[in-house]
Image 1 (tube, rainbow, N blue to C red):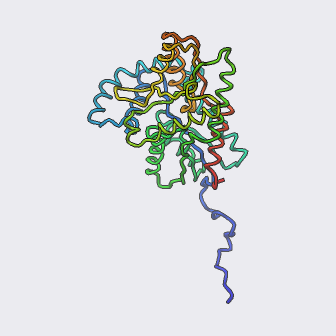
Image 2: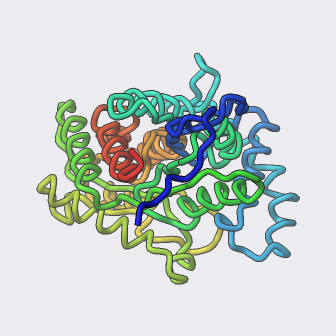
Length: 355
């Protein structure tokens, strides 16, 4: 039996995507949105207060019952902390651009990643956002969709997964998608704590940084941002992923567990956090006779307040005050060639099937 071709309108060729009178709509692009933690818009009291309120109101970040947390946050913390944190930010502020270093570096990462991916496909559009502060995730998702991106890859810039970091980025993405009539297809980048490209880049960066010193560290600390111990007890995999990163970095650099040690920084409030604490370890090492110490921060994709001020200034002072002499912070991967190699490798892998 011979089949009869389906009837088609002679005015609309079969290979045309849209009728001639169809409204102009951008489509067919692939978006990549890299997302960093966040930064205040300024170092003044009100800019800091807005940023801290958004950050510390996130139930992923602070799991304390709201009945207890809201009075403490609004009556105490947001009254006293903005001024102090504003002074800290002023010490690392990019005054030329009038912005925090995290915003400067994240923008550069997006620009460089976009240039690299342009060689792969001219359909890829790379943008950047902050989970807290500006530019917001919602704003940049809208911008990508307006640019014709009907498929978007969300890349939280956290090598190790934690509910308070990776998960809250994804929460914000899906909360915005829930308000859209026409949603793009979305993928999220998984943690990459043991990715060979990431471990290799850390090892290369650490070797290059230490080779520039005229002294050799006796100990290197791998300092990660901490989380409350209770979050780990509830099933957060963060500690385990940090530990594996350190084990792989030890193997890649040839440093054993005495020369390269894992610690946790940036604890907040009276609750017990993941240990050993970075500041207490720094002090104890100096008191035990260690004179030369270096710190690498593998959990931070970009240098920020927690690396440039908390480690390079506060912990350096702790070390020297306790009897240490030489202290060095290994820069984050930032927008360096090794750092961009990691972002490109992970992005290309997660775009597989879309490109």
